[in-house]
Image 1 (tube, one colour):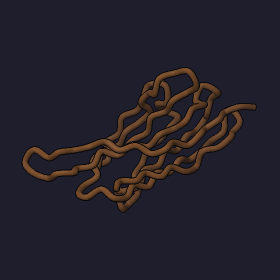
Image 2: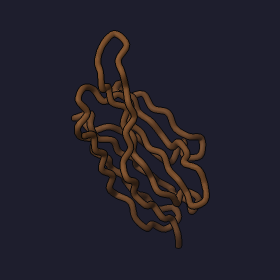
Image 3: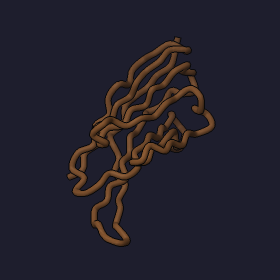
Length: 123
């Protein structure tokens, strides 16, 4: 059973910072990319950032230069450092992990999601 547990959300004033953490467990084989999405009230879930097992990163334009994604040494954890937060960043933030479930020349991969952590940016 694959589980992803997020932590680090909360209430912060505009211009402040938060650091989200996500720990994955239960992936039978390798964890490939990990990342973050978010969903604001009344809006669809949107991509925030992703990082590959090799350390390559991609960010949404809306967070580029303000957010930094990184992975822990054990490669089963991912962090999102969020600086210069804006009210528009208010959302539930979800962690995801791309796990290899059947290895091979053409491996079978599956995406897993955490339960989400609330981030509220307000004065």
